[in-house]
Length: 428
Image (spheres, one colour):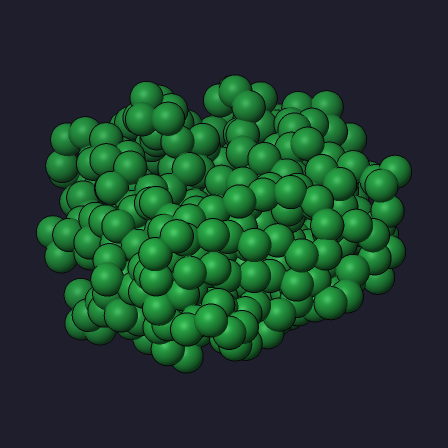
């Protein structure tokens, strides 16, 4: 296990401390009314991309603040291949210019630049999603150029090596032109043939960024939790490469829990499916942030660029609930050791606890029990295993307690607890 000599990479601990991020799916799939492209067939024409609203990225940033998100990942290029910034990527030796992007659409702006400017202005850290293994414009699927598929407009004919040159050029643009990024997303990973170039580029241009799907490229790697439903496995460890992690792994690689606001796993705007309810989102919060995971919640703007009014309201409703329920504890403490007690004075109705480890000392807790002092006697209210950055333990029922005790029944070293608090159910 990780003992006292271990300290995590600062950037990855900062990432875990942010807890909530958003991912914005606004690309040519939005204009086409599809959930992105799949396969090497021809994508929609660039001429259909024309968001008409003004300052829509500022609206996104306001909703991030309303939600309480601390970072935001914008889908700069999804599977279709359409670039939402004016890319200069080109292959002069074959006379090819990457002409599937905003500057070849009726919309001449730079959405990536506007996004970065507006989220930073609201104290939210930017990041980018760029799929290296899919690009319908270049007939790429599964990381491979499908030369057997006929080239149809707006597609271009490239070799595998030429496609990989374009990937490196475009990632170079995104990683060098917009300042420090909180996170980059390799959806589906990356081709093994690209690994050396990607690693060098990433560690030169964005050494402090975290990378989803970036295990082997950076020490600041983030793993997928294994589901898009919004519920991480429990226990869920900060180390390891499997979806639930592995407490015995030496690799710090915490989980991100990506999920949609829209029903039916719809990432791009789809007005026909409706939005998940606040009650469902509460469960998502407990199943992600409450299980030592980062919640990455989807934003799906309309073709005009703006988030729909019902989504704007739901993000604020969700953020308001998080702040009301978990903004202030009925009582809290911190410290080192196998037992910590929160004293509440008079009997107080409580029904949940939040436990946080100081992960700069490693993730040490392996099992715990929670007991409440009720009517002059201790009674067990819950048990658990992983804690990590944060564990939210919601009990089966509320109790009128004067004290609440956590006992760390298994640990690999002396637990170092940065926060242990209990909460009143009334605001939750």
